[in-house]
Image (cartoon, rainbow, N blue to C red):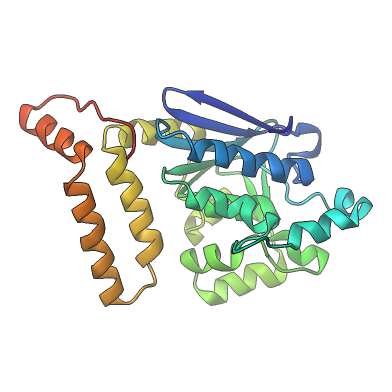
Amino acid sequence: MTDRVRLDIRDEVAYVTMVRTDKYNALDWEMLCGLVDAADRIASDKSIRAVILSGEGKAFCSGLDFPSFTKQPMRMVRGFLKYGVKTTNLFQEVAWCWRRLPVPVIAVLHGYCYGGGLQIALAADFRFSTPDCEFSILEAKWGLVPDMTGTVTLRELLPMDKAKLLTMTGRMFSGEEALRLNLVTETGADPLAVAEALVAEIKSRSPDAVAAAKHLFQETWVAGVRRAFSRESRIQLGLLLGKNQKIATEANFKKKKAEFLPRK
C-alpha cells in the first residue's frame, strides 16, 4: 500500500479511500499501484462482504495526473505493458480489479469525477453520487480516448451514440444528468449513507449467492443464450451444494436472522 490509498475494514466492509486531496485525488503512479494493491488485499479476505470506494477532500478523482507521468515517461510506458497472460495493463487494472472482486463494489462520488476517475467508478457495481458532482470523459481534452476499461463499461450503460458524444466532446455534466444517462445508480445529498444502507441489505443475504450473482451477470450479460443458461445451471448447482444456501433456507423457515459462514 502507498500513502495515496487508505484501506479500512469495519464490520466486514472494506472502505477504500483515495487520499491525495491537494491534487483532487489525481491518479499518479503511486495512486494506481495503491488502488490495485488494495483490491488484491480485499480479494484474499473472504470475510469481506462489500467495498465502498471514495475520495477524500473535495473530489472523488480528477483523473490521470498527466504532469507526473510527463516527468517520468518510462512509467507511462511501464503502465501500458501486460505481463504473462494478463488481459489488463496497469491503467486498465486500476479499474478492472474492482470488477473482478467477488463482492459488490460501490463508488461514492462527489466533487469531480473525471477521466480515469470516471472509468474507475464505472467498473464498480453501483455508483451513488451527489447531484452536483461534475463528470467528464476528459480524455478528449488531452487528445486521447478512454483506455482504462471505459470502452467496455460505457457500452454496458450507454447507447453507442451517447458514448461517442461524451467521448468526442469531453463535455462536463452533473450527477443529475449522469443519473438520466444511466451512468450512476442513484443521486442524493449523502451518497455514503445510501451506500452503507445498501451494504446492510446485501449483508443479510448469503455471501456465496451475492458473489455468484455478480459473476453470473458479468459473464453472461452479452453471452449467447446457450452459454448463459449453461452458466446459470452450473452456478446454481454449486450454490445448492453449499452450506450458506442451507443456512439461508433454515433462517427463512425459522424466521430468524441468518448467520452466514465466510464466502466459499
